[in-house]
Image 1 (cartoon, rainbow, N blue to C red):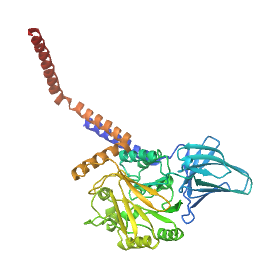
Image 2: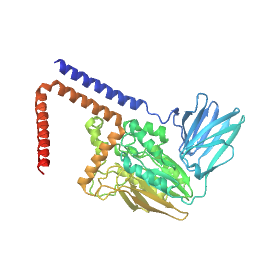
Image 3: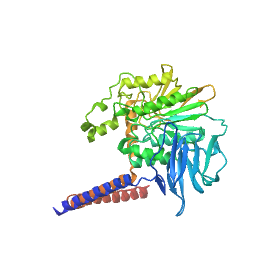
Image 4: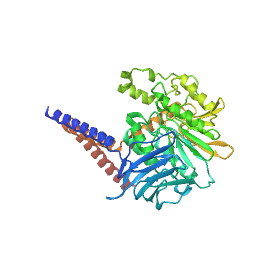
Length: 486
């Protein structure tokens, strides 16, 4: 009984250590050292975010005030995140003041700035820092404009999730291409836990060009919307690039709720489409209004009772359902028709989507729809392959180039084996410390159990060892005899 009690104590201690690790992971997610996030303040109609700095105002059009960074014990910088290739920063001072600012998600080598900034430094390939000195009651606007580019193309991708190996290959190739920017249209992570967002953030920090994102259904799980907002800002926004207008939408609710896009967002969308008339319009979202595949099983998840949705088994089934042949479109077909009619009414050029881990291209009511979900997530749709898209943009047209990456053989058994290996690898990568701790803990438990029952197996092990010893000794003697006779 005493031995069993010790084993039980070890199990309880191991469970407490594991729980403490998970809790620590949730409560200690930090974007970077010395960073303190700010509550999101962003008006999608004007694309302006403002922050009051002791009675003085810092605003950015085409971005948002992300947080403060302590540079040393006496100084801190306001960190601004760009949501446009050409942001404009405006400062209004009531007193004489020196502003220390950082601007991230830009390409320092591809932009020029208006006068009025000092101590400009490149922190990394997509972040600069600078100082602005203002007199009392002075207003200063700092414009960032694009230099003429020989490569105005854009890279589109989606559903990288936990396919870390494939996604890392894409990042490396994109840096070689050096496009104007990259668009990731959702499912950045497999679940919204802090450690998964940390891995995604670390991976995309290697990009040498700006990254614009939108939310996928996986990104908002486990309270992931909160972390996404701290990292990447508002759920929907838009910007101009050359003679093109890019609109980013949040349809992440469309998998588990009956309405994919809230009414407030539809109102903004139509107003933004109206303002963009005369430009070539691209819309970026995650869940497609219509699933182009045939013979699909309806998605019944939005119709489930809340008690069923909250059950552990149902949650796990829902996570895996993304790999099955379920209808991945809007649940409400009237909403789907509403969305598609808006795209046609305002002459949208192309709608970029993902959610389905494959590539599809089709035209509906004079609008091109592209589904590109091959940036790393498991491949189970027939004929699917890992890929991303290069969108070549000119003043007259745009055309797509699909870049394929190594993919598992297109056989269902091979695909499931590859998916299993990917999930096992990603779990280890996401929870390395925890996996190693559990392995050590299990090894200790097994060792303890073997020690407790050593009287039952030790004698057999000793005899087996003695047998191996005698066989080895006899083999050596026989070998020497053969050598002597030869």
